[in-house]
Image 1 (cartoon, rainbow, N blue to C red):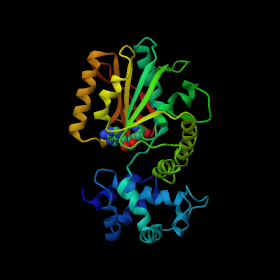
Image 2 (cartoon, protein in one colour):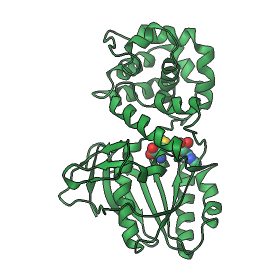
Image 3 (cartoon, rainbow, N blue to C red):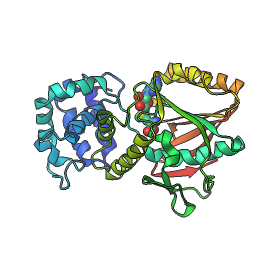
Length: 336
Ligand SMILES: C[S@@+](CC[C@H](N)C(=O)[O-])C[C@H]1O[C@@H](n2cnc3c(N)ncnc32)[C@H](O)[C@@H]1O
């Protein structure tokens, strides 16, 4: 795909969910200056996401410019006229400030509502290991918000409400059978995440990058991100910097061998080269030969349900699908 095609593809993706980014992406696709600016972004980092997040990051930081009047995340009364001329002008005027973000930042959207899919999956695995506390290892945790999953409240509608706290994650269950949801959260022995670039939610720059990655119209996701960030600031999870595939054996070696491990990843593997995906599978299967180890991976799209991802489960011997979830966790179907 050429860069212009990538922006057209992104614009199509935004239809119905971000009118602002749809208009901007169509404009960029036709604009040689902005395409050349986007070329500064290293390949395979999600170029449109990074360009729009870099601009959004500056606007969220309070840079004064007429472009801000189009962003629902910045103003209460956003303009609906064509935002593209102001966007182009903003990029030209602030190119020097944008370049470091374009060159160095990654697509690291930390979607905390995905925990509504992880909670039943952890419960299922907890049942499998007789309720023993789990050692959680997240691959590609970004800011680690999903490692704090048992500090949030879960609202599954008729299927129940779980947990206490200020950050309420609501979702819909779209299957006839409800997933296994115990009264108590499954116990956690330890938790650690491995990311190429862990984001520290206590750091204003990183926390703002997480906000900038959420599309401006998605107020609901901004609200959840604020809530989860407050929680994670009080209980920051351990995040290790490095390549998850390379670091995993070392992290596993640090966990007592009789403690059941649950490795998990959501929306991370699409950022891995294919060879690394194979290596990850081989390493996990090898590790599971010597200890109780389960792997949850939210990676493949579940084509039979539009916009859904499959959460697959490896129990040490076999791979099976546990559930399908909407990419940001708005609904789930328990399929096991
Ligand atoms: C789209 S974010 C998803 C974050 C989180 N898992 C979630 O679902 O909200 C993907 C994350 O994977 C990380 N990542 C990509 N490749 C990686 C690798 N080889 N090793 C470790 N982390 C990686 C990125 O830095 C980013 O933080």
